[in-house]
Image 1 (cartoon, rainbow, N blue to C red):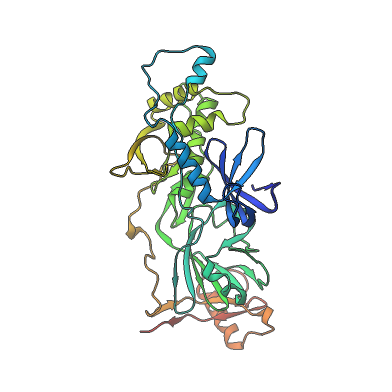
Image 2: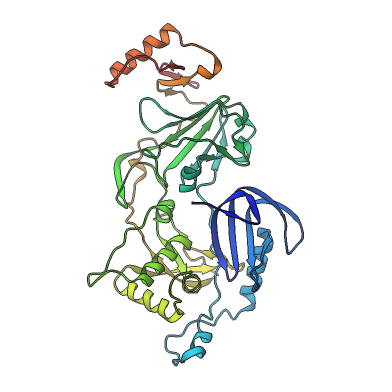
Length: 419
């Protein structure tokens, strides 16, 4: 669930990610305005870098200054000062002070929940996004910048997930557009879940959201997926399933290690989370729990999980600006990563998707029969529409009344586009 930040109380804090010692990147539900503490520029952005001072003050920075600050810190440290398992053991405070000499690496990755692959079509715009939990919790749909003005004329939003009659998510939208999101969405949470990939088609008066059916259902984390999904969001957001060791339940520290990697790690296309050891140690030790874990204890927990094959080692690389890359790139400093696979995600072939390519603007394609809300326009359906709906309802084998729902008309199946 989101929270409120005292610095920006008028917006919701959606996500907070620690990127370095005393640094976090915070994503808000709408752009906020603030003066950057470093460059003093007036900035308006939905992502703010926050540096917490030793006295507890929280200083907002723009993302450009955040990157420069972190890069400067990384370059100033000894890049070759790494943990040596054969080093002589130290006792007490001397041991704690000598721990964790490695610099943390910045984990930076595009959010699949934001609009991407935005293209213009004959009727308007099309884009893709992956459904995330905060979309469901707060009832909104992300919009690309090109769509914000066009959305003013949209009256109906519906979701087509393979049923004969699409679900209406929102009607008579009015003033529910704030920033880069469309609010007031009634997501059917019994049909959709985080991780589903959604295609949005924006016309003059309608926003159509659609899912791409899979040829066969896929089960991930005890969830049944009938539509195309993004393994990265599944790895991050679906509830974890604890896998106890044969000799007993996994320790609380080991669970914390796995959850830290899952929540803060770099996610790859196979649903694996990867995190450098310095980042893992730092974030586990900063966890506000009932016990303060030492770096040595965290490494011991990692070693135990690797022996039992709950974790494994992988190799990435660090760019000159301190950003992690995976797989490793030639010419960059290699980085040892702790790899955690929260869920077994089946490898899918492209032909498993029933709908792979959507029709282009110039191609002819069929449009299934569907309901269209007209009550808010003061219109009534024709007798032909009532009869066509009754016939389609009967042929589909649906139970219940064959009468057209009040306030709707029925659009018959037809073809669109050039032949």
